[in-house]
Image 1 (cartoon, rainbow, N blue to C red):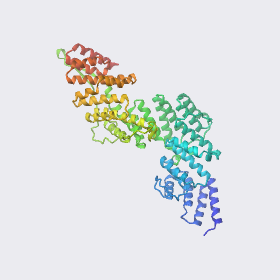
Image 2: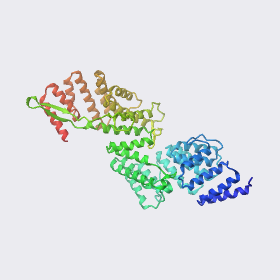
Image 3: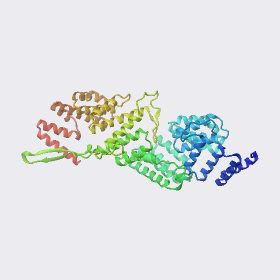
Image 4: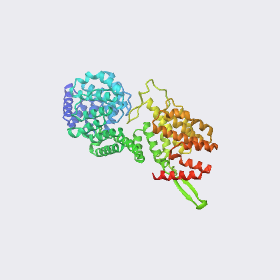
Length: 566
């Protein structure tokens, strides 16, 4: 049995070697200590795991994670903590959880450690508090961040080396939670530059934010993958892309997001990419690029990006909604195609044929619709995911409080949940009508109309699509009820002109179709003459032919030719 003096010497030597980053010597002294006290000492095993991990330049992540998980007696990423676990061991377990993006689990572990109140090492306590602050910010629970900071402020401020980092974390939480604060930060370090630019961006000072980010060129910084786990170039390009996307410059934003992806790929090809601290933000950059490409009407490029984002963030309903939008824009773009006028025969036997090129809309290859593809069937599956992720529930007292986590974006409040869900219903109606399923489209429209919070524009589209579905089901009388002019007028009167005009055209066109199917061609013709839109010209053409107004047919044909040319 070794005496205390024999054990103290290798402990001191191991610590000195570790501080000097001489990990081989530190491991050798720990092995000596283990021979003295036995192989079942968890503290020694923990220290050996840390030294071996640091000796691998923080790259042997899998082994380190397995050893730490075994020592805490849990399967990663479980959080059922045993009371006997020492705080330093649980802290390292939380560090692994944090870098593996298990922020909730990280927070739960650290809160349990702090609640135990058995942390004797002040330095360890400070590190636990800082990691807890960072993890709560990553979870976007900013009020909780500020609450923890208020409780433990004195503990951190006893260490001048950590006070700047603590203040930056507090400022970030205040900015992101909407606090209006005056920053006392100097733009002499890259971390402060990012925070200053973020405040300017949140305040709507877009040009100032872009100029502030440009200051990195004049700074000397030690901020790279090796030291911080993140590449400065990728982060700056991404932030510039966000800035330009917010001011509706999607082409410029897409350029910066592409640069961010390229810089990230370049960094991930280096040897340091295997480190635990490496910030693997490719999925975030790809998601942002997908949004920018969708805004530029590049549905194919946006679809590829958003499919990759959905693999990383499958619980984000907004991503599935955007995927459905990509499919609709690609598959239904022929709706915007111009009509083709063809002549058949000659002389008195001349016939005029108004046609529209038919493209193959739906997959006939027999492949599963669950495989991501730009098809309406896949869009329907995406919208089903949206509705599953946003189940019916009672509204909270404050409808603006976040209730659903949706990484990499901001959490979704009750009000935003209603907007996303209602948008999904509108798109679902449109897709089901295009898939020749009017019964399901009618059910979706009625479901939308029964939602607790529905905007006027969503209500108007629900009535329009319900009417179209009923027309297809040969229920003309029921369709007319959805197109009641005073009701539609009340809905669209408060909308922007472009939106109200679009809805009005759709409503009157559907009403004209109802009258045509009832045999009241005169009323239908009066309605269509009030609509000044090329979308109803083919319908007007049909009516003029039915009523024998050949001269008017020629006028409409000239309008169609002019529309095609323009």
